[in-house]
Image 1 (cartoon, rainbow, N blue to C red):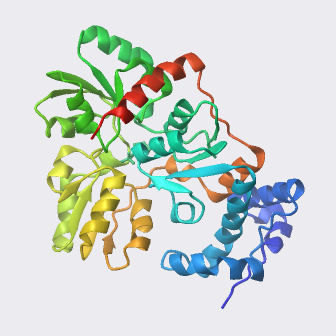
Image 2 (cartoon, protein in one colour):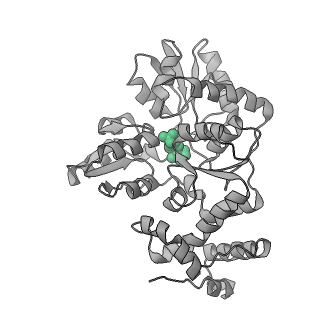
Image 3 (tube, rainbow, N blue to C red):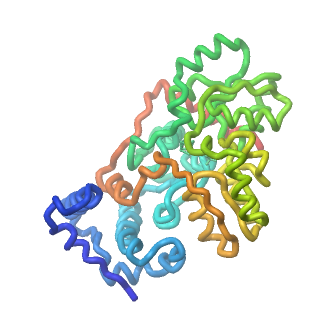
Length: 369
Ligand code: 13P
Ligand code: SF4
């Protein structure tokens, strides 16, 4: 059965009877209609037919009603991005309608940075958090980099400033400073090199020093310290999503599901990683599931990733502790469409800071692993 939602009826109701979200959606739909009448945001039979193959792939995740809302946006975004010569780079934490519906490339922070450097599109729409969009702009200053919601921040990037790094240099003279990519351009400009969760151990070791500062994620630093002979000095930042996982939480899931494998992101506390069968970046976790095909698995990380990976691994059962990143979830299909339609919100990085930050990011990309 093809369900055709009568969205116009919703628009016509008196606004006092609509929820805030519905009012916003009605106003947005009207804005699109005024600006680009050729864009169809109703779930017409033609759109339903055209989008059916994608729905068949994703139907374990969406009801017909949910799909009726997403499908017209997916179609409109995919058409518009071609007209704009734009690519959509999506982090693995994007919701499945973005990850599977509109992204040209999806991956972890390192893969996204490499793709931004490689892509020859004129416009990059970064579906992720602000530091990811800044990294793309640093790597491709000649491109227009858009982020659908510039308020999509990150508790780690907020945890450290450029002044903090300058203070650390004074406090630890001669000690190399590695910063996680989850930092502002201004911080990247002050450090010696960047790293991501995919390459942190190798980057720390590439400094050829007995002691290295790794900022700002305290847990990542602790976890890298446990995997190398280098003394890794931490800072006080934490990811507000991963810090919520604890060893007792993991053990209680394991007691309920003794056969499951547990794979965890290195932004989790060390006690959580001790409970895990594998630790890796979001991209590393996805590859592990693909390669190992466990009967049951729990991804100890942001919630949407299990949805995204489940689609490609139908024989794996996902046990889902659900911690959402509120910043990643600010990116939605309507905001992506808005972004492409009105070329907003454009990301700018001060050229002097950008040139210095590029050194740190490029050094990381150039380290052979
Ligand atoms: P990854 O580099 O592993 O994708 O991690 C980025 C991130 O923000 C995780 O919280
Ligand atoms: Fe930042 Fe954590 Fe969200 Fe990743 S999950 S973007 S580290 S707050």
